[in-house]
Image 1 (cartoon, rainbow, N blue to C red):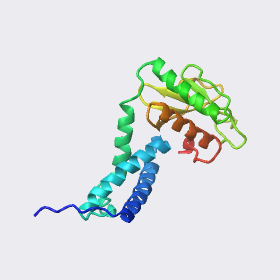
Image 2: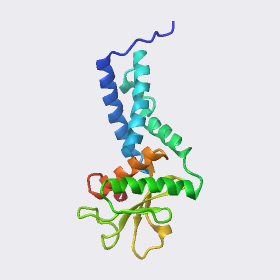
Image 3: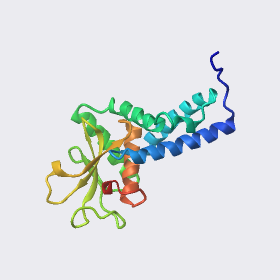
Length: 197
């Protein structure tokens, strides 16, 4: 006889949401090729929370999933694949999103503007020491292959050789704000330095 789903009580829902958030953060630290914005983490957490709730309605606890699969990692991967499907395919569309990033940064008091397909951020007193002199600048960019990119502008180094990390975020105005916020957190030293990976 097939199992009959049960409903999840509100108290259990909060516990599931907490477990989902913790699992997604753990999975994000394992997926070192990407840097996740708050929006990406929240979306993956909501997806995982829903998957946990469905499982629990069949008496499958969140910890049981870990025995057979990586649902948290899958939730992040699915979220990122949805973002990849919306990567701008023209320089004009990418420039418009980078203009939105620059505007968001200016709203946070950062004097910057887009140059070509790059939005440089000025160093701050507590910025991480990047490059040989410790003075490399953080910048945001976008490619048609990977979407949002966090880039280190190294002095006297050809731009194609600058270190870069793909950032998981939607390719829209909300994503532009999330990417700007992540860059500010890194620049201020409130987020782990992704270039030390």
